[in-house]
View 1 (cartoon, helix red, strand yellow):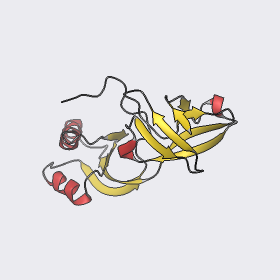
View 2 (cartoon, rainbow, N blue to C red):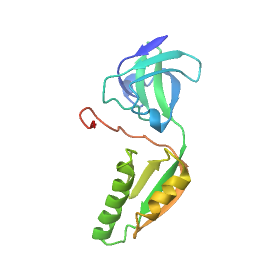
View 3 (cartoon, rainbow, N blue to C red):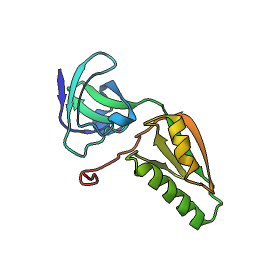
View 4 (cartoon, helix red, strand yellow):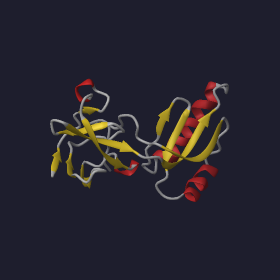
Length: 164
């Protein structure tokens, strides 16, 4: 069994360029998990025990055995996609973005920003998210539900979490 205690880089880092890669598929709700036991696609047993604030983004390398690295892969997941109209008035863009952020952030659902697009993982059901959207009253955005990769970028860093 391999014990991963830190994120040691990204698969595209030059230091890993000539190494084999074993992938662990991680879902969006697992991205902030500090402690997890799983297997790579090739069956290698891995215990993950990361520092608080760690985030398993696509391509994160969590172990290096010398000739092989263990890395995180994100598979497409169903998500709410909010696309903003780039020609809209800036005030309306900011208001719509704030409404979406408040509606889903208040439920502790992570919101990812990709240019003028927000991606919100479905943590309950599509119908619950549609019901939430009815009360948001977006004016300069279109919404859809699509399968996309989530948590592609580094997410929450140490100190950016809060407790109740």
